[in-house]
Every structure is written in structure tokens, then in C-alpha cells.
Length: 127
Image 1 (cartoon, one colour):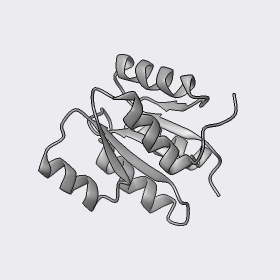
Image 2 (cartoon, one colour):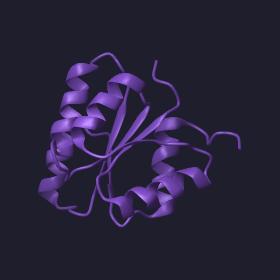
Image 3 (cartoon, helix red, strand yellow):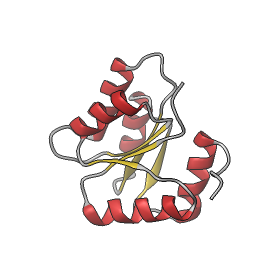
């Protein structure tokens, strides 16, 4: 079973900083990958319960990375939530088809992020 870990896969330093700060404020200490390839490797190594996956990244885009995580870890209940500034109907369809567990639009809204995290992780950790 995956540990109570959250993996952020995000190449933009500002977005990464904001996501980390929001999660830390609520008692989580997220793991970080800076591109899709690193995200796949870290998911295999750390078996997070939740992955917050940027869709537009170098080396491997978020959709491809999500599909690869699911291919490599078919028996692991890892929720992968897309994080993107491009929230179109086509993007939503693509995420649904790739097996994403949800989609968070950028800029990230703290209540939406924490609601999504609690949905996939359960109650917030004790600080």
C-alpha cells in the first residue's frame, strides 16, 4: 500500500514553491520531481498515495508520465491529479482518458487543493 506521501511533479519553480507552501501549511511534506521522467522514477521508488502532476513539462509531459506510472505500477492505488493552466474540454477529456483522478486549474486555489488532498489522503496529518 502506498505510504501517506504526496509527490509534486512540476517544472516551474514558482508553481512548485506555492504548492509546497500550501501543503506544508496543512502538515504535509511533499516529495518533488521537476519533470515527467523524474516523476515516474520517484513514483516507482516512493509509492506516493497522491501525485500532483503538471501537464506541460520537459522530457516527458504529464499525460505520458501518468500513463507510465499506471503501466509500471498497475497494482498500486496511486491517485494522479492533473495540475494545469489549460483547462479546456479537450484537456479534461484527455485527462479522463489517461486515468487521472481529477484536475486542478492553475493558479491553484488553496481550498480546492486541500479538498483534493483530503479526498485522496484522508484527514490532514497531525502537526
